[in-house]
Image (tube, rainbow, N blue to C red; front, side):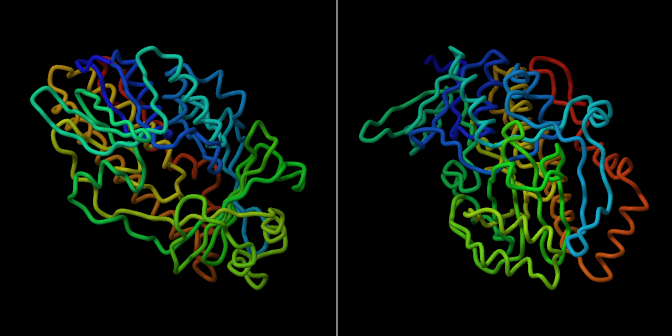
Length: 405
């Protein structure tokens, strides 16, 4: 692939594949390096808020995604201690009118499959699976990236390298300037169960959010309503290794004890036969930016705690902004990458801070929890949702010329 308009993307996750599609849409080429031999349908469900779905739809993926998504009609906030509804935040048509794009939930594997299939159809995107980035060298005409597939070593030339390879980014490590991310002393347990296994009210197109002592629970339907995605987050002293560590059901039940949690949420937690567990990590300091023709995207740049459900959305936003900046300044890719980083720094830092604050609110109990619940009831669902206008109404720049909004 000729290097003059080629961009190398390390990582074929949601951010990396969206970046490749956005770059293609903007008239550039993308070479995507992914060390996994195949893109597995692993992971939990994810929420795609309007700031993310707007971009995916603009990339022409809306109809494909509709085959797998669920469009929740509300976020139903529940008391973990009493099993009573605290407040209901309207989504569905209300959210689409308010924010100009739909709110969807989807299994991560389904989203990745749609992105990968779309990338494979583009002649200006090359997807190299089973290929690990090992090193790079910056030179006068851009960058050369060395990668390995089994015993074969390949050099690819490009105008830029994008590290979209997640929390433990090899590209970020190769930059060699920063310490590892910080363990947040919380872990998340996740499971998928058949929709038929849960009570009828939990099969409805809604996001259920249970707030309780030192923990919270989220569940909603995915796979067009055939499965229920469950995520339980609680305080933890030890960091589980990796994304797919096996979670112990008895350990989870102890963290949602019958002294603090009502029977209904505890019964739901007792349904899955197997849980997967992953530790939550954060970075308190913003990424200072890349060097030369190198930058980072998504969790590699700014990991998001899950309490605002914006990890995937911020990576998708990154991809759109990055493509726009490169398309609008192709003569000077290094300046384009610095402009991208500047454009994203304030917004991603605000989202990280909001997620941390949301996490603190979710774990309150006793008098603090009572005051939180009372305040939410008094404010009401529509006004609570309006507080996210800054987040959900954001629009990506046009991939060619229009300014940021």
